[in-house]
Image (cartoon, rainbow, N blue to C red; front, side, top):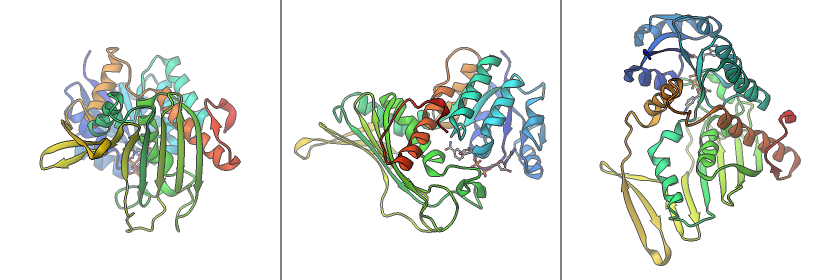
Length: 344
Ligand SMILES: NC(=O)c1ccc[n+]([C@@H]2O[C@H](COP(=O)([O-])OP(=O)(O)OC[C@H]3O[C@@H](n4cnc5c(N)ncnc54)[C@H](O)[C@@H]3O)[C@@H](O)[C@H]2O)c1
């Protein structure tokens, strides 16, 4: 098959990760950039050598010389863009979170199934060697099972000058648990399998914006493993939290977040009686990893050589955890999955 001709929907921050991956892949080319800000679309197209730009994804998806699109616009518009891409016969790699409602997620999956086009989710942490190493250590039983993954993260919502204003605006976004935490939730599903239940506490704490910016979520997996995911964008601009990061605790020890020492990447496993096992590993950042690996995986799926590492169904299930978290917050109850589709 010839090179896959890409249209980038959105010329903002995330296009700066996707377009270099297209440019670095000999099986891909960037043809057009669509952005509601036409001046930005034009400038980005000139900068990256794309043949065209336009001001709307409706126009882009109808272009005969575009085979596939990457959806990288505010979350509120993902479903519309992803569905229109399918209806126009284009494959789609959709940024996370997939969409804001389960109905929209399902509609995007159905549209691509009907069209026979590939839908993949840009849940790029599945291509991250650091998180991958933690997953490998869990699967090798270094912490024992069942174990618990902990993620603690707090900061400020993304915003100007590097990102748009929309991240903390409830009209366009559901805040940190989906915009950032969807990576954690998806990676946890990738590691432990499906989530059995969700318990959450969430509120709006920040002195700006209108999203649920402070979130604490406890996940119980069908496997018996657990996770604590705590994501906040509640701090004022310019403030930093005292600590944050990832680890895994289990009956046989604790797997620590990988660390870098000079050029070497290391992962520490703390065991009984003060023993620490330190394992070096390769953190590649090459064409098999991160955005390059993700794009290569998407192209393989378009060519029928593989299935997407993160599918539409995975996007749906990550969003389902968020919807359940909202329900848990509202009812004060633990929420069992799967949810009935009509829940939100
Ligand atoms: N994988 C990751 O780690 C990661 C990182 C950042 C962002 N993202 C995701 O990428 C998406 C975009 O985020 P961003 O940081 O690039 O945002 P951004 O604010 O930097 O850029 C968004 C762009 O979309 C354009 N836009 C807005 N509405 C539009 C519409 N209806 N049609 C066409 N263009 C429109 C804006 O003009 C802007 O240029 C979000 O879903 C976000 O969650 C993912």
